[in-house]
Image 1 (tube, rainbow, N blue to C red):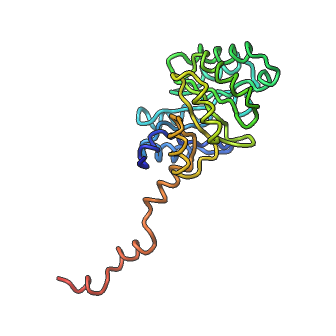
Image 2 (image 1 turned 30 degrees about the horizontal axis):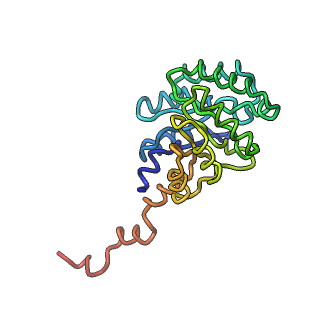
Image 3 (image 1 turned 135 degrees about the vertical axis):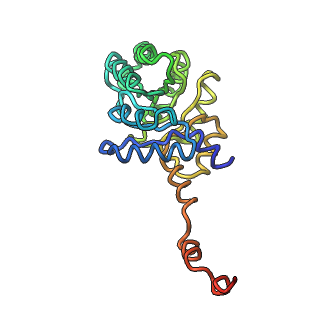
Length: 238
């Protein structure tokens, strides 16, 4: 798979808690340059980013992030506010407290509450696979499939682990075929990205792919020297 195809599936991500407006604009510029699927940024930066990119790039933000234990009503307000300020996609964190209590009806209603607040926009549900047992993952495959969400997402990238081959395989094998998969966290090479896509991931949450693409396009010191100082025989040509 070519680099541009993988970048087109990438949510170019900057969620560091101290990121600045200048950094967000840089991430937006990079996403536009490489044709990414979206930029995934903190809610506080959504309005500024939307004004900056206008319709050149989709804006994704995070809801109930990174812990997921806000109430459904609070998450719904977050989602509605983000959309009002220009968000095209929202990535919500599932209520892991309810998951661990096996309160499955509550988990489903938590997601559906955000779904109602984000109707017409893409909703991704982060289940934080690194904190789950296999049975909990299987239960969440069924719940997210039934919730009306568009994607199930492996990870926040802020916990003990990110996307794994085993988890992407499990999600694809056990979710409704209409539910798409976003692999996020720990995707550090184009080989990683290609493997996750081959296993069924439709989106990739990472900042590293764009950094690799930038590095690949940067001129080497030797080529820069050659351009500035042509070889002697070239200088002598008329």
